[in-house]
Amino acid sequence: MPQFSRSLDVYQGFNFKKDKQSPVGYITAITIGGEALAADQETIKDPENPDAAIADKVVAVLNHYLWETGVTDAMYFSGQVSVANKQKIAEMLLGNFSNIEVNFKYVIYEYDPIGKKYFKSNFLDAEMKGLLEKNGDDLNMSVADNESREVQSPKNFTFQIGIKPQATEQSLNLATSASKKIAKKWGITEAAAK
Image (tube, rainbow, N blue to C red; front, side):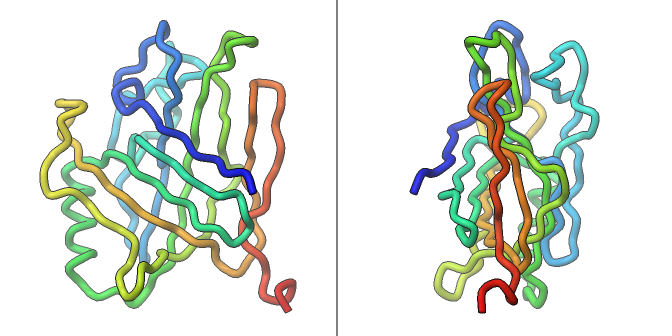
C-alpha cells in the first residue's frame, strides 16, 4: 500500500523564503487528553501567499509526517514546539493518562514545479479525532529535554506523537500538485467494522 511520508524543512517552516521550494508542515491545533496545547508559534508565513502570515498561529512546525494511508493506520508527527508547550507535554507525560483522545488539525505544503507555486498536499476540512497510539504499555508521545539547534530563535523542542483513528469515519485531502487532489478516509465506524 502506498504511504504518505514527508521530511519537512523546519528552517523553511520558521523562516519562509520565497526562493526556496522545500516542503513545510504545521500542526495548527491539538488537544491531548482534554488538554489543548497553545497555538503560540507566531509570524509563520503562508506558503501559498508568502507576503502574509498563516491566518492562525501554529502549535508545531513539523519536521516529519508519516501515514501509511490505510483507514486504520496511525499518523505520526514530529515537530518543534515552544517552551510553554514543551513544559505542558512533559507535565502530561509525568502524570496519569485516563483520557487518550486527541483532536487535531494540521497542514502540509509542497511546491509544484509545473504550476510554479506552493499547494496544500495534505490537509483537513475539519478537526480529526484520534487516540494516542501505544507502543506496548507506553503511549507514543515524547518531547525532548534539550532545545533544538536547527532554529535558534524562538526556542523550540522536538515533539513526537503517534495518533490512531477513533472509531468514526473521517476524511482528509491529499494532493500531488496544485490541481490534482483526492479525498482519503481515516477511521471506520464500529457499525461498518461488524
